[in-house]
Structure formats: structure tokens, C-alpha cells
Amino acid sequence: MRVNFRPRAGPATGPAAGSDRACENRAAPAGSAARAAWIVAVLLPLVLPAPAAATALPAGELEQRCWLGYTRERTRVDMREPRAVSFSNLRDGYRVASPVLVQFAVRGMGVAPAGLAKEGTGHHHVLVNRPLPLDVKQQIPFDESHRHFGKGQTEVLLDLPPGRHKLRLLFADHEHRPHFVYSREITVLVQGPRSQVARPRIDPARFEATCAAWYEDEVARPRPPDTPLHFTNVRAGEPLVSPFNLRLGVDGFGVCAAGLGAPKSGHFVLDVFGVGRAPLNFNLANGATQVNLFIGAGDYRLRLRFVDDKGVDLLPPYDMPVRVIAQDPV
Image 1 (cartoon, rainbow, N blue to C red):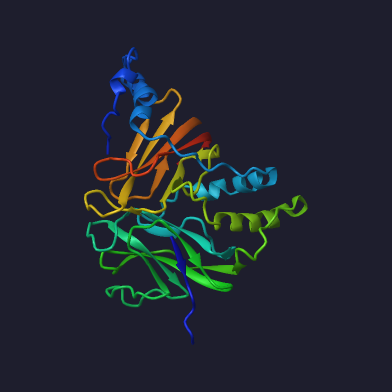
Image 2 (cartoon, rainbow, N blue to C red):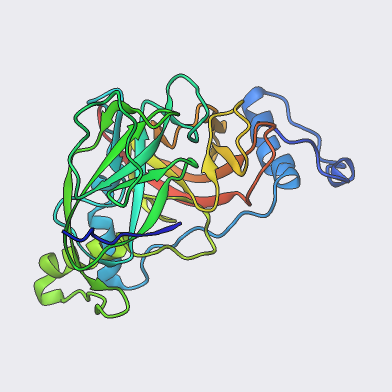
């Protein structure tokens, strides 16, 4: 989704056809852990569409080193507030080009489109160069400074003119009345249209400063169109420290807590497969858009799915390998 801003003047699927034949001579082993691993290896590929290729780490040595330098910042588990919203990819002071990719994160609540009431859910709004509303009982206005994402969107491409812009996320209910859940305000510097702004390059002689400029541009760039379902803060093969936070995104669909029946919407399901380990499953039927994983060191495959109320996949699953290299005490 892309929005222009102009300042004002003044669960489970059934077996696939032929799956019995495909499973001939593959008897399930005894033992719950072994049986679960067998299901993952044999049955799951038969009932799911082919997974989409995960976004790779940057190809260049300097760019990859720079990206990995921010991994812990992007994935650190934050449990300070039970309910919170934040920008998943932007921080205060970032220098960006327009259009700007703005990704939303909510913790402790789920997403549901406007007009559909369910306890513990809401939808995102971006305040552009506007303070928080004084009266939280009033509906959020519909204008260019109050951007509504009432279809349950998780991100937006925002067109902003050159200059400094203040942004804040505000979470609101089905009637656009604010929950007492909002992000701190950040300021981004838009340097100009993306087509006219040179992409930053990393200079090994000035690595720290030029890495920061490259990274700020990288996370705000429009994503490739072939990955509508994705992890917003981790890339394939990225070494991680457990516990870590995964943030989930989808483009072209809205997120909706199960049971509300909103059109062109669904909810996330995350499967975690580890070598020699029983798989983990997270069915985010409440409309949640992030997961904290507490898992041991080793190699894993993360499979992200986006399903409707009946558990039918709305998009090809998104598979991504990661490696947990260490664990932090909690």
C-alpha cells in the first residue's frame, strides 16, 4: 500500500489429493517427538503450497557486516510494557528517501479491521506532523495528517516531501477511538524523492558513519513485490541470540483476528522446525503480529503462513532458515 502526503496550505488444512499414495511405505515412527518430526518431513509438504523464497542477507561483505551489526537491536525481546506499538523499521533521526517504507508493530494486542469489534484488538494509525489527540474519547479525524489503516494493514509506503517529518503510531478500536496505546514520536529526515537520491554506500575507511547511512536507507526501502508474506526484522541465515523477537508482515491483505470474517484478511501461523527437535506451532488467531521465541542454540527453519478462519492458506508460505548462536539469560 502506498499513501501520498501533501502538507496543507497555511488452522489445519485437509490432505492434498493423492496424499495416501505419496505416503506409501513411509510408516510413522513410534514416539511423540519422532512422530512429529515425521509429520513435518513427510506430510506437511504435501498439504501446503510451495514456499516463497526468503529475503537473503545483503550480498556485499561490508553491507552484510553492517546489517548484522544491527541484528540484536532489531530482534531483542522487549517486555517492559504489556501493550505497546512501535515502528518496526524506523528510529528517531533516520535519514530516508521518499517513498518511505513504514512498518507497524503491536505487542499485547491483536489487529482487526475497522468496524469489527473484538476485545483486545484494534488497527493502526500514523500521525504525520500532528500531536496526540487531546480527547481520547473522540474518533480520530480522517485527513492527511491522520493516516488510517482500517483494513488491518501492517505496513505502508508513505510519500513525504523533503524535510523533517514527525511520525507517531496510534492504535485505535473498531470505531477509530484511540486505545491508550501509542508510540513515542520520531522525526525522520526525508532527503528527497528516491529516484533522485543516490543510494548510500559504505566506505570501509569511515565504516561506522557510512554503515549507519546505508542501514537507515536499507530498512526504509520498498520491499521486493514477490514477498507479500515476510518477516520484517530478520533475513535468511541470520545468526540470532535467543530469546529473540520475530515481527510478521503481509502486503495486499489485512490482518484480522479469527472469527470476524473480514474480506481479504487472515491471521498468521508460525511453525518452527529444529533438527532433532519437536516442531513448535504458534497460531496467532488473536490477530497478533509478533512472536518471542525462546529456543536453544542450533539451526532452524521458520515457516510463516497466512490463513483464513478455516486454516486455509491465503498465500504461499514463507520459509526462512536461521541459526541460534547463543542464549541470553532472561
